[in-house]
Structures are given as C-alpha cells and as structure tokens.
Image (tube, rainbow, N blue to C red; front, top):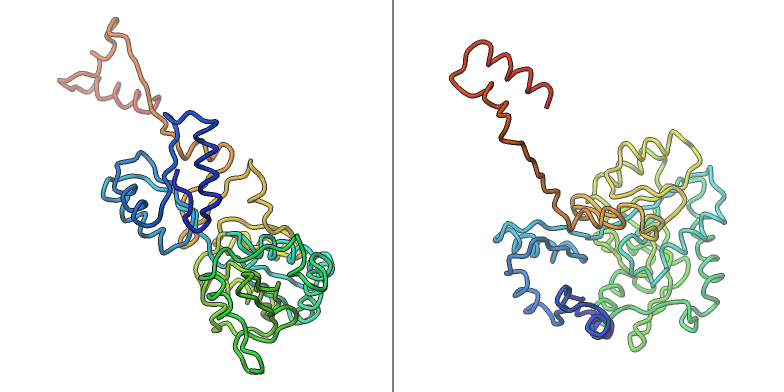
Length: 332
C-alpha cells in the first residue's frame, strides 16, 4: 500500500495503524514520493491498483507494462450535471450543492459543471447559491462543515480558474456566490459561476475544488453532444423527470456511472461497482467487484484415466471419429 504523499498526516497514520493492527506479512505500507513510487512500479506485482489523476495513471500503466502486470486505474474527469425544467429547483439545487461542495469539491465524482436548459439555468444558479448559505452560513470560512484545499499548489491552481475581479468579459463567467480566497488558510469559498464559456480554463481540466460553472444548453441532446465532445467522465448526473431524456443519457453518454437526481450515490454504496472508462479509468471495484479485481479465476479440470473414453477421439481419424468429435464439441 502506497498512500499519497499529498496527505502526509493520513499517510503516517495509515502506516501506524496497519503495523499495529494488521498482519504485516500480508500487507505493508510504503511511504514517500515519486522516487519510492517509481521503485515500487518496477516490481513484478500480480496487480497494481492506482487512484489519482490521468497523468500519473499513464506513468503507472507504462511501468506496469514492463512486467505485463494488469492494472486497475481509478482516475477522475469532469463529471457533468444536466438539469431541465421538469424537476423542483430547490431540491435539485441542494443536492447539487451537497455533491459539489462536500470536502470542498475534492472528490473524484463531484459534479464538475452544470448544463441547464434556458428556462431554469439562471434561477438554478441562484438556488445553488442559497443552498451554499444554508449549508455553510454567511461565512463558509467560519463553518466547521466546509473543508480546505489540500495544499498550496492546488490552491494556486484553483485560484487561477476563478474570474478576474472587475473583468465582465472573463470567459470563466460571472460569480453568483463565493470567489473569496485566503492562501494562508488554503480556503476557497464555495463558488458558483454563471455564463461560463466552454473554452474557459475552468472547463479545460477537472476542477477538483469548490468552483461550479453553470452553462446554458438548449436541451438534453445539446447537453449530450457537449459531454461526448470531451473526455469520458467518471460519472454523469441527470436531473430530469422525463423518462425519454433519462433513457437517452443512459444510451448515449459514455460515463462510468449515471446518477438520477443523486450525485455521489454510487461512490457511497459499498455494493455497487465503481469505475470509469477511457480518461476516467479502467476496471471497477467496491463489494464483489473489489474481490474480483484482485482475484484470478483458475480453471481446474480432471478426468479419470480408466475407463479411457478419450480413445474414441484419438487419431487416426475416420468418419466415425470425426462425427464423435463434432458431437462432443457441441456438448462441452
């Protein structure tokens, strides 16, 4: 087990608890950074399971190929929400706000952006802002329920994605709520943007932070085309009561999972397979799938030597034996 060097306290605690309570002949913890990870990846393991970003995922897969080691990659991506006018906006806004701003947006299946139809987009953005106040108060920085950004490097990256103050034409859009930052506290306020350009930097990478762009689309078909023009997401969330719309999303959106009116739901459940495709990963785990991914189904077969019924299909081959072989081939 190699914990992330980006969370050193959790890494140290994991190593301490595993050594204290678990069989260290069966599980070992290696702490460190890229150098230690590189050394680990050179070993001929039976399976490598990696959770993280796509850049390192490619490094892991390339290193594993040297030993023909199978890999499972749990990556990320820009998980979209689609909202139309068939759903109650207050409840929808609260669910999106909860899914997005849990752990300050630092979950791999957090709603990354919202695609909303023109009849609800502006009101939805405002309702999400109201939900933020309901959850975290007028000053989220003082709330014990709102997390901080994991380190300064990611704080700086996220800060660059925010609209520039005073720039009405910023492609990131207009701030509906939030936008405040405090580097010393690694705090970025839960932020809702409206009118974000698809070409804005905030739409060019997985946000993995408390910034939520809301983009207007004409209908579900335009939303699907928007999603499919980009890398495959780890999840897609659909807020619509229209069964036809739901069916089209299931059929046409290539995502690791589809959630109807429920962000994060498949991550929370320990019974549902969890995994992505393409840029969002390969393979799945959780529950039985987790057991299967670390297992190999070994076929074991036995046949008595007496009586030796195989003698009827041994060479030399004649018409009768060929017919017997054909019959056996259909039966086994």
